[in-house]
Image 1 (cartoon, rainbow, N blue to C red):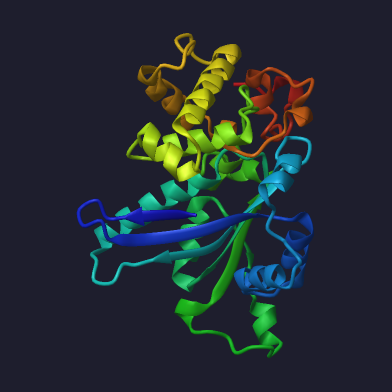
Image 2: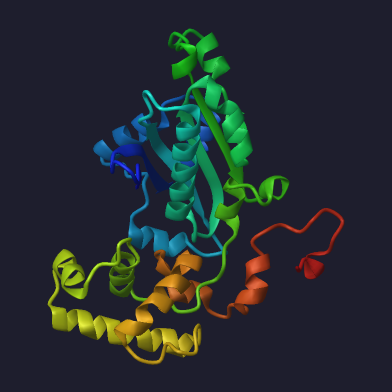
Length: 293
C-alpha cells in the first residue's frame, strides 16, 4: 500500500493498494472480460481461495525464471476544491509512490483497473495499454453501463510488450536487477523499517518489530556483514550507525534487495551488469548477445 499526504497540511490526498496475483487468477481476469477485479479478489480470499500471493509464495516466483504479476487493486484521490496545478502535484507524487511500492520485483505483467473515462489518456502517458473498456460486457446487458466518471477500464503491460513503452513510468517496473546481498526475511523487515522517512531510531524499530534491542543489534551486525561480503560499498565493513545512511541510500536505488526472494533460484546467476539487460527483450533485428548499453 502507499499513502500520499500534503506536505503543508499533512492531509491525506491519495491512497493506493496493490498485490502480486496468481497466474491462474490473472489469466481468468484477462480472458473473462468482467470488471470489478478488486471485488473478485476479495470474494476469492473470503471464500478461502487465495489469489494474492503471500511472501513465501512470492519467494518461489520472484526470479527471472518465472516472474510475478503486479497489480493495482485500488486507487483514490482526495482532491475536492483543489486547483488543477495542485491536482497535478498530487497525481505526480502518487505515481512516484506507486512505482516505489512495486519496483524491485522480477515482473512479467502489470495491470490496473481504474474508474473514470477522463483518466484513459493519463494511463497511456503512464505507458499502459488499454486492455479492456468492458464494452462487450455492458452491451450484453449484464449490468447497466455506468456514467462516464464511474466507468471501469483495464489497462496494463506485459514484459514482452514493454519494449514499446521503454522509459515510461510503467516501463520502470520491468527494469529488474538480480539481487547481490540476499538478506534474510527478518533482516529485510529491519531494513524496510529503517528506510522509512523520517528514519526511525533503534528503540522504535525494536518496539515495532517486537524484538529486544540487543537482538536488533545482532541483526544490524549481520546486515552489515552481508553487505560487506557483497562488496556493494567499500565503507560498509562494520555495524556503525554512521554508515547506515549509505546503506539506506543504496537500498533506495536497489529495491530488489528488499523483496521476498530465495537464493536457490539464483544459483549460477550471471553478474548483475549482464543480468540487468536480460530484463528487456532484444530490439527487433538485433541479436540478444548485442543487447547492451
